[in-house]
Length: 433
Image (cartoon, rainbow, N blue to C red; front, side, top):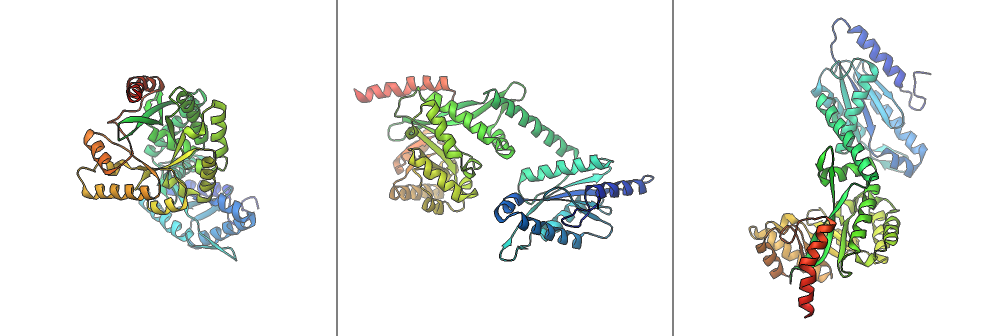
C-alpha cells in the first residue's frame, strides 16, 4: 500500500523512485539513456471546483485507466499529488522520441471524460528529462522534468518540453526576474509614464494613457511586454496594477479636470470578481473622480470569462468609469463583443493605422470602423500615429482622436506636466481669447 496511490491504483512517487534506481543500477556499467516524464492536467482545478471533488476523482481515475492502457511494455506510470502523473520510459532514449510519446499521450487524454450526465474535455502539459544528461539520481531527474513542465505551462495549454541546459537557464532567468519584480512592486519602484491622446480636429490634448515602465538597477530597462505578462502568469498582476493605478491617479490630480486618464486592465483582472471594488476603492482613497478614468481592455481579455467580465464592466460603468475596447480589429469576433458588451470607446489597432496611406484595404477597414462606431455612438481613437500624413488622413475620414509618437512619446509625470504647460494651457488660453 505504501507504493500505491489509493484513488487510482497506480504506483506513487516511491514506486517511481525505486524503478528509476533499479534501471540506473542495471545500466551502471553501460549507462544507456532512459526518460522520466510528468503530465499535468490543464485547468483541472476549475473543473473540480465546478463539478465537485467526486467528479474530479472520477476524471483522475479515467485518466489513470487511459494511461495504463497506452504506455509501452516495461514503462511505468504513477500518480503524484493532485492532477499530476509521471512516467518512467526505459526505451525512450532521446528528445524526439520523448516528444512523440508526449504527443500520443496528449491525444489520448484530450478525448471527452464521461461524468454520467455530462462530458468534459481536458488538455495536458508535459515535461520530460533524459538520464543521465538531465541528472543521474531520482530527485535530480524529477526536478529537471518539473522544470521542463513549468516551461510548458508558461507557454500555454497542451505544450511539451524536454529538459535542456538552455531551458534551465531560461527558467532561472525568469525566476530571477520574478523576484526582482516582486521587490520592485514592494518598494514602489515601477514607474508610470503618460502618452497624450489628442482631438484630431485641433490637436488639443484630451487625455493620457498610463503605461508601466521599469528600470531596474541590476537588470536595466525591462520591457512591459516582458514583466506585465510575467506578473499575470505568476499571480501578482493585481498588486502591480493597483500600485500603477494609484500612482497614475495621484499624478493625474494635478492635470486640468477635463483631461481623462486611460489605464489598461489585464485578462486576469477581468476574471476576478473583486476587480471593480478594488479599482473604485483606489480612486476613493486618492480622491480621483471615476468619471475621469477610462479603462482599456482587449477582446482576448474579455473572452477569458465573459460573465465575470460583463459584471465588472457594468459595475465600473455604473460608477462613472468609461470602458475602451483596445486593439480593435485584431480579434476574431470583435463585432460580437460590441453586441455583447457595453463600451464607450474603440481604439483602432496600429496595424491598420500604420498602413492607411499605403494599403487600400486598411483604409477601407478604418472607414468601416468609423461608420459603424458613429452608428453605435462610440468614440474612436486611432493608435500608433507616427507622422503628419497619417493624422491628416484620419482626420479627413472623421476619426475623432489619435495617439502616437507624432503627438508625443510616453513621459514621466514631471515631463507630462511640462508638456501640458507648453502645449495645453497656451492653446486653452488662445481658445478662450
